[in-house]
Image (tube, rainbow, N blue to C red; front, side):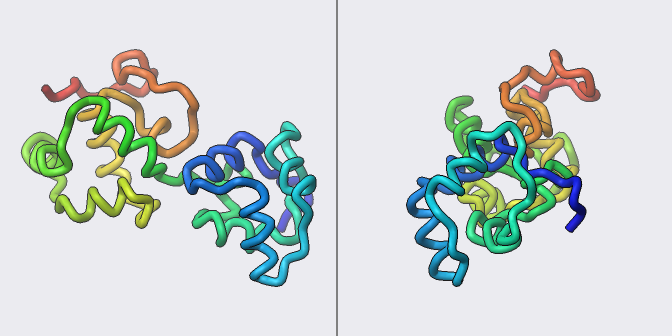
Length: 166
């Protein structure tokens, strides 16, 4: 692990929220894996702007069903809770999204696959799936991947390429 890498506090807090972990629960689950860490030590990861990568980073990423690359800001990770909240807010069904992806984006996915994404059982969908979902839900791929905090309309995003499919 490179000495100049730092844990992103924002991404750490976001993952804890996405996975429903409180800091005491995280300390408990890390302890079950043999990692001795204190609640203040975990809280510091979420408070400090960016903290050095701790020696237990791999176990932390495993417990949070993520990767060290995501925690340090190098990798993207699809955030199921954001996807779930958006499709519900927009009044979409998973079956309708699957059908729209196939019809307008030529991306074939099953309703069950979209359910796995929504429940965070799959956090690494293909880019064309994320792009298609972003178009259909009128947001950006970066929002669904946890790289930006604000829900932005796709037409407001710099990388808007396709019209929103009604």
